[in-house]
Image (cartoon, rainbow, N blue to C red):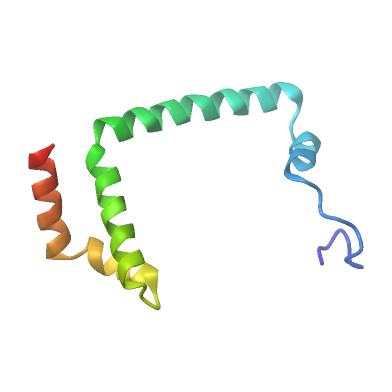
Amino acid sequence: MSNLDPTGLMAAPTLSEAVSAVFSEQEREALKSNLQTEQVAQAKYLRAHPEVSRSLQEGLRRVLQTQPDNPVAALTEYFTSAEFMNYECKGESAA
């Protein structure tokens, strides 16, 4: 229940309804434009740094293979390990 609906009987607004209630049409268009610009910048960065994708894929592969009880802890341990640093060095030289 929210403070606005203490009974809990009203449906929560959709994201689209909430955005329309908060932002003007001009603000929504500016947000869309900024989002597109940011997405392009992020795609360019990832293309310039393929090691990011390789590293994430390897971490995910290991989690799926071992299926640890705490996958976040397992990823943290892997990404801070000497094994990961060695993997990254090999990956960068192979690129």
